[in-house]
Each structure stands twice: as C-alpha cells, then as structure tokens.
View 1: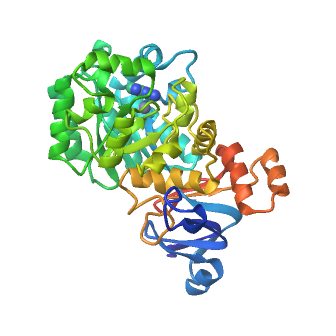
View 2: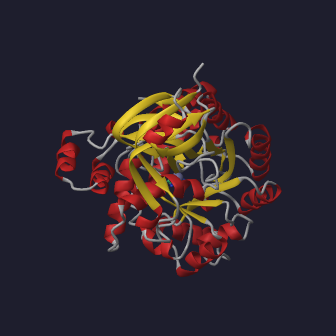
Length: 431
Ligand code: GUN
Ligand code: ZN
C-alpha cells in the first residue's frame, strides 16, 4: 500500500512572525511547491520537482496554482451556538439572554449535543478550519460530544465545559464545587488523549462568583499544562457590570488575576476596550489576546486596534467567535480583521492575515509545535485555496500582477467556495 501522498501547488510557508519582522522576511509562497504527507504528518516540504524525484512512489495530488496553506486555526468559538448564528437585533447581554442561553440549555440532551458537534465540524471543515478552541455548555456531555466528534475525524480540538454559577438561568448554572469537580473529571478523561486539549473555561466574570473563579484558578494551578479560556472587555455595558460585581478589582483583567486566572496559557477573547494597565499586564505575562472581528462588528462591540497590541508583543490569535461571529469562515474573519485595523489607520498585509489565521493562532494556543505551519513533523492539517473561486475574484486575479494581490482578493472576497480541499492528519476530509 502506498502510504505517501504528495500535494503539489503553490505552498505558503513561514519562518518568522510578520508582526515582529518585515512580512517579506518571514512569509514565502513557492509557486511550484509540494508537501509530502506520511502517517498523518508532514514528512517534507519543498520544490515539487525535487520531492517528486525523491519520493517517486508517492501518490501525487496536483492542485495546480491553488494555494496550499496550513489548516486554519479558529482560536475562540462556541460550537453550541452553531444553530443560532446570525440572531438579530441584540447587543451582548441581551443577545446572551434572548438567544444564546435558551439554545445552550438544549445541550442537556446528549443526542442534540452530538448532532450539533458533528454539524459544526462538517461546516468548519468546509471552511478550511482544521482546529478550533471551543467553549462547550455547562453540561459535561457537550464537551464529550465535541471531543468524540473530533477524535472520529483525527482532529485537534481544544474545548472545555463552560462554567457559570450566577447571572444565568437556573438550568444553566453549576456551582463553584461542581464546576471544579466536573472540569477536573473532564481533564482526566480528555486532556492529552489523542489530539484533545482541555481548556478550563469560566465563561466570563459576570457569570461566575468569586468563589467559582477561585476554584477554577486552583484547578488551573493543579493542571498548569491546560489552557484557560474566557472573555475580556468586549462591550462597555459588560465592563460596567464587572466593575459593579467586583468592586475591589482594579479592572476587568484583575478579576481574573485575583483568582489565579491570568497567565501565558490564558486565552482572552475580544479585548476590544482594554485599559493601558490591562495591556501592560497582558504583555508582561504574555496572555493571549484572541481577536474576534466579525463578532465585534456583528454584536456591536467595536473595532479592536490589533496592530497596537501586536506592537506591544502580545501573542495574538484570530477567531470567528461563532455564533456571536456572523460566519464560520476564517477568510471572512481575515477580511473583518483587515477592516478593523483600517479603522485605526493600519493596513494589514495578506501575509499577516494568513499568518494570524494559522501560525499565529497555533502559537496563541501553544500548539505551534504540532499545527499552524507547513513544516516537517507537524500534523498533516492543510487547507487548499482556489485563488479564482468566483467570477468576481477571478476577474480581479486576472488583472493582478502578483500572487500576493491574488491572495489578498481571496482573503477579502473569499468564503467556503474558495476552499478546494481540507486535510486533517493527512486525510482529506473535504473537497
Ligand atoms: N461573553 C460571554 N459569553 C459570550 C458568548 O457566548 N459570546 C460572546 N461573543 N461573548 C460572550
Ligand atoms: Zn466567545
């Protein structure tokens, strides 16, 4: 049996952080490149002719002038919100109460959780996403549903039981103790099993008592190799609410730090309205800021000044925030990130946007040794982009003089139609 597969096309590779150095020095496109897959991993990356000669028995899958990229890494999502994406007319707190909590209550039913987990991973695969970091619901079975669906696909997923012990409906509340116990049991069952990674998941400070935040801080101290994911400074009303609930805290970030929930393995979603102190502190501890630009526009949170945070050396990830975000597509999300930065007078390059959606998010999740770039040893998680996927994009590409202009047109105007194929652990799962 032939166990080697050679994907040929234009390959996108990284050897640096395009927010820390000139993008030209750290992002390359090889117009006649190839990626060799073997035993679920990337075995080699190089020139197509060289690799064809070196591995003459490999099965060749030719993608012509399509762009072979690392699979997209979506660093903050809520898979349980799949079925209520694009819910009309509310901002954060009303949106949670009106649409989100009733939908999340349905995940008490394990069959429904399994159905949505499978649907979600199918939709994201169609959009070229190969890893997500997801909030589940308060129900441990919702975590099992996502990890089981991911394991069946050979997929790396980060997930955690969402913890809430106040300011949520009765049927969506746990306690400080049960949140600790259930999360600990899920860590034992899933963390590091196959490609599963557990993230301790307090939803956000308003829906946890200080006792619950403390319990989860203690749990993180016992399992420091786990990630921790939450929300931070998304909307002004929310920030005011946090101030009233935690009168002794210096600011929103301090509500996490005071309870042991600040660190480099912490993933802080949104961060649209940070104070100078919060930015300083995140930079100091290398806490991860996860940018959710379609969500920030859709729920009315605002336009994050991402380049300003990058300039402070804060590690950044990019995310759809499904279903507060209005799309499952990381291409749509890159476009929204471009627009948010333009709002602050910065033009992000397509190389920076693609890096954020792949290697940047992988680094934010501390998974860059395994995913996020085309390099030997990483998992064979790959997205292949058709750079002429619609008539509108094709006519723009026909006018262009450079591959980066073509790539930018697809970043700005592309969606799932641009995703020619998605590979996970060396196997094609879409296209
Ligand atoms: N803050 C707390 N929970 C949520 C959520 O589900 N979505 C978003 N966008 N923000 C939140
Ligand atoms: Zn979120």
